[in-house]
Image 1 (cartoon, rainbow, N blue to C red):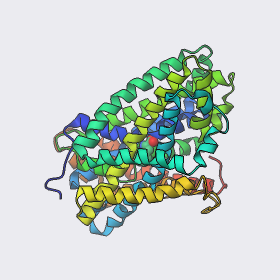
Image 2 (cartoon, helix red, strand yellow):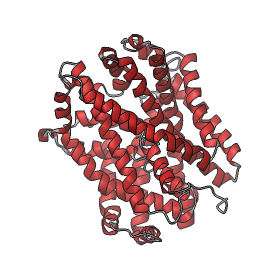
Image 3 (tube, rainbow, N blue to C red):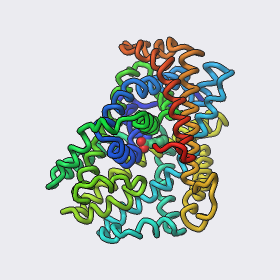
Image 4 (cartoon, rainbow, N blue to C red):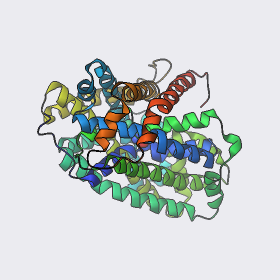
Length: 451
Ligand code: PHE
């Protein structure tokens, strides 16, 4: 398998595909409302500091592990040290859990894009629209199948002809759309109050929970701790610089997140007459509040189409990375052909996705730990498994294979300028911070802490 492993053609292909994975629903929908909730500028500041330390070190480690071994998560840990292959198994479970429910939400996005495309803006803006749509059976299934079907087709085409090609088209379009909508939103009369609220730090809102929330978001946003970057690293050529690739991926991810705040916060401010409460809507911000905002905007239907197209591209490049990771693990582990692995992963994801989907409709009486299926899968993957995998990865790199192994991989053809920062973060800062995230997210899930 390893000898004729496919690869990205060059640095650009790799960076765009990895950035495609990182930029997703998390950037566009979750980041703005967290920033608004945790004191605007202060959240941004904390987030950026964490990105260049914590995020940088973990992403370097994962990509280097993948490139060094030329294998996806399970094989990679096994090859580096047999005793620790369980970390690879744990990491592999995460994308397999996320892909199905991520595709359910992807299906909702396609539905909204369609609704705006056919001009039914005022219908999408009604209070009951979202709730009544997701509680149906047949319609959400159709949109879900379209989204996951498209993902599977792209992955089936392979790394170079599928993943890389699609990223090279979608990512530039995504940047242009983001800038366009952000500028439009900032230029609306009355928008400046929102911009100020977003950028000016409110120090009174700073607390430990600000840091924890920023850290949790960072993980998810950079697609860390789930084997994705290991897999993508395994397709990376040796002469490409790891350090500058990681810097570029981070710039992309953070840039789009900040832009998304500029699209959403001023617009919601204008819509709600200067009160930030509407931003606190959480998950319903994108599907309930924003359509209302678009309805009141000049040219709102057009902006709505552009916005949901942007979200669709962001979600699609992320779901591709999830499926690619699972497919590559199945290929490597069970020595199956790529086609057969795709089929297996597709059938599994449809079956598990239906649980999450029907959990809002005919199966809404079924609860696990008091949560609906979708929330439960989200909780297990993001709040429990990801911090555990990240913790084990940093211990593994810091104390088992030692930071030097990663540094050597990074320095094969290029210089690694921030190697001291890297070693320090991976050995000391990362393990401590991650334990804090894990404890706080489990406590908050059970209502013992409010984040
Ligand atoms: N990083 C993506 C985002 O910000 C989310 C994601 C999570 C993508 C897991 C792939 C895997 O939305």
